[in-house]
Length: 341
Image (cartoon, rainbow, N blue to C red; front, side, top):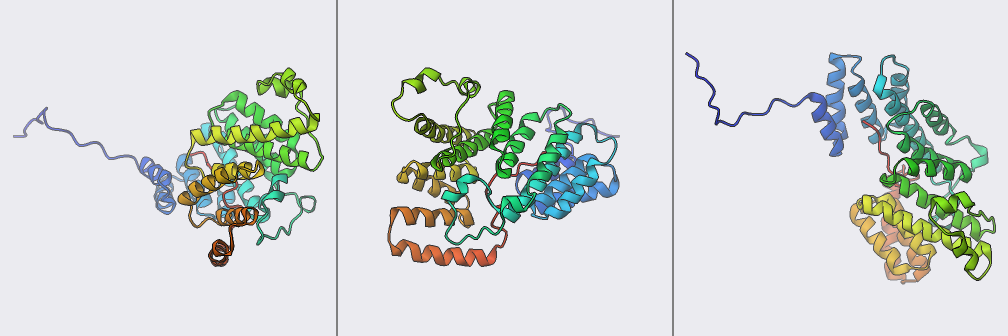
């Protein structure tokens, strides 16, 4: 005779699905385990779109970008991917962006102020078609409206910025922010765009805010007209203020992003706020102590503040050691690689 279950006894939860567990591993940063679990599910069903997408995301996070691109490209051509079409299109573009960043490093104007003493920029934008593939992929993805449009436009804006088309970059980020102001990477990219505008102003290549842009950013045109001084100098000052505010907004949404902290560091440095720059760098180093861009930033800070050779020698030794260990430094910590699962 079987006994009826005691209603007061706590029932064990049902076994979680394999995809849920593999996605949890991915979110925790265990990409190798997540990929292994996704591959097992694909063996059971070759058309498991969810697991195929997760596997490709894991490849990308493991820096196996060529394999990831092939996987996303193959997935994008499969029929019946339905709601995953937009996600796969975005992920394919992001892999292509990260590939190009790994080749060229930062191609923005603002990089000229922060090029590390040990860096060698061997590629020139006019000699390559870098970032064009990512732009084309995301432009195609946007032909169909989807739930991730603000994310696609955010990264498209960043690709245009790297490509050297700041007008298109600004247009795309405004569209992204119009759709949602609560995506931290949108604010991060906005900050990067205004850093470039600030640097262009420093080189006498002036970009003036149009009445439409002033309205979008809630700036009264009369406030600018009432200020004393050269108009280009006034706009130049506004760009740095905008960059700082954008990075601060982004950090309020995600305080654990090394990329945002490096953006704050650059902005503080350009504004001559060295103590604040050092604090931002300190927080970034706590998150990623062996990140080459952070050590490069330390060299830049040491150069401008002249803190002395006792700070410099161990820093340079550490930097050279890490450069020998890590050859994939050019694209590191330029923009978060948030793939869509």
